[in-house]
Amino acid sequence: ITNWNFPTDFHFITDSTNGYRSPTLSVALGIPSVIAVNESGGGLVRYKCEAGISCTSQSDWTSESVVTDSNADFPNLIIDSSNNPHVVYETYTAGPPNTYMVNYTNRTTGSWGTPVRLDSNTASDSAALGSKPSMSIKSSTITVLWHQYDSASNTYDIWSHNSSDTGATWNSANRVVVVNDSNNHTNVNVRWS
Image 1: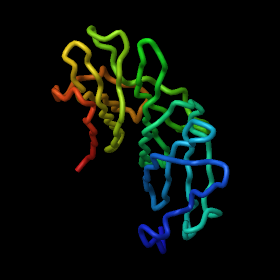
Image 2: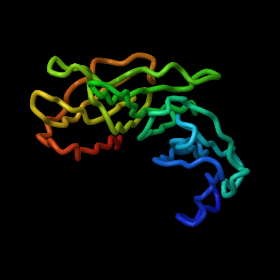
Image 3: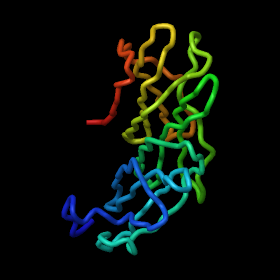
């Protein structure tokens, strides 16, 4: 990446017909990628800058549809050491009961995989309410955190899911922390140090 002067030069996603929100940035092998929610058409769109150029104008970037779910929101993007993109996001299904889910997808071949639901139904909830996920990668291990509502205790607790094979399979979801926050104020981030 060359010639970026944050924040003034980072305005490449401009489109007269589409609105975007919730962008996240990931950089791998010196190549930036951004994922954002397409507000007019729904779903998630990934923008990627090609190597060796300045990445300061919209024409330097290419785009691709990641998921077409019109209820997708709060995306998080990481790029693995093989330059494969991985995305985790929240999606919503109207009820009753209303259901918020945490889904994961990646592109390790020529196309994006079928999304996998990561949040966990608990014995006390008819529908899991997982939301606002965060994701990190170290070597081939991906860790996803999110908060999830538990109706029995009226709390939003922090949950975790891990994959030791770069998203091919996932272990069981685990409650990490009981937050005792009934106001849905829990935002979580995961980072490797």
